[in-house]
Image (cartoon, rainbow, N blue to C red; front, side, top):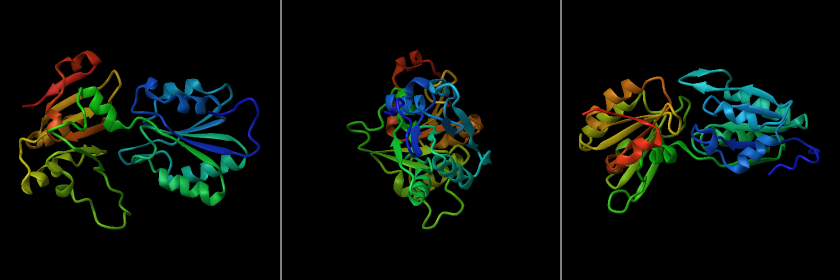
Length: 262
């Protein structure tokens, strides 16, 4: 928790997970960080309602990125973190989900360490967990799934090393959680089927998880392309595996809209 009774002598950065979307899913530690912030550098998927926790006079900088449209490059974000921390300010870097899950955390902490700036990482609820909860399922379930794999459907262009081996990742007894994969879901499903995975493998495409605008689309690898086309333009999490067929009938009471494709 930030001590706001006395200002810090030097700048400090809190890298805070905002959670999956709903404003009340941020942690208490994250909320406390916002309550002591002097400047918040926030992403597109961080709920704007969270900024109400900040004190009067707090400055807000939007640096959102979505579907290739960036208001600021990662290099510019890194520069802003260092600039404001060196000015002695209490800086909160507010990210959707958990900062350590496809949140560019490693790049930002490397820059802060190199600049000698103290920082703290505040975990958040990641999209895979929120999506599973919204659908009324468990990512791991005795007899169905003994492992859950978090993977990105959008690998960066400058990545060094081999591309993801999707066939190896999507194994029986595993729930595959795909982030940022709506655009690539159709081709991915075709590859999995071509490499021996059943076309009847269940999957869910969960858009805007935890929000009132949440939509859950259910289908199989065979109908994946149709589901992806229907979900274009909305932040979505994809769950592939047998647990995807275990959704609770009462889940509709959790304020989501279920759309099923045969």
